Length: 239
Image (cartoon, rainbow, N blue to C red; front, side, top):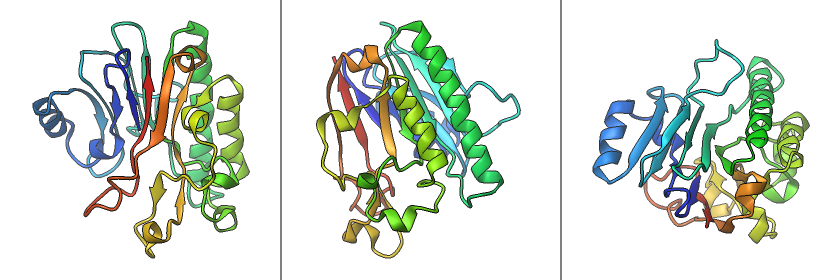
């Protein structure tokens, strides 16, 4: 997911790359490309990164609420003008039910509590990344196919709705109401060519950030390229 704009210092959440290289190697590559990189990664596993054109202050390198959770799934920075950017990689949760699904729900509960604390600051903020949740039937090619998957189960959806009901805005849906707008296509069974996708990557904005929202969208351009990620960029622009 990408959050663009002067106040955002062109900050980008680059979760997948952070999980494929060591943090030092990835940081060197990104800095050579002109970015300041804040990275939390686990090689060949989880990882999150926030890239910015201007220096930012690192606020958090893990989601609060569980000191024993060592998964690299959350990072948070603040720009010089006080705009907070949280980058996340929410657990997949499959198979469900089971321990992995329990961990997903617990992680989402922690995210809700952290969002409450961020809202209390009244600073503009976004929480962006791979949420691994399909919000509605309009966000998946086949609701029936995904109804028992951890991404489509009501327990996952209810927690995402809690974040939205707290006052966060799904920035993409401000500008695009049509169904069938996806950010992820599996590599298997020709999913992209058939447009069998899901929308599971979001930029959720606080009320103060939403007031500054200029535009948002999904960029499908990279997905059909050779060796592309199974996710495609989701972006939002703020004034």
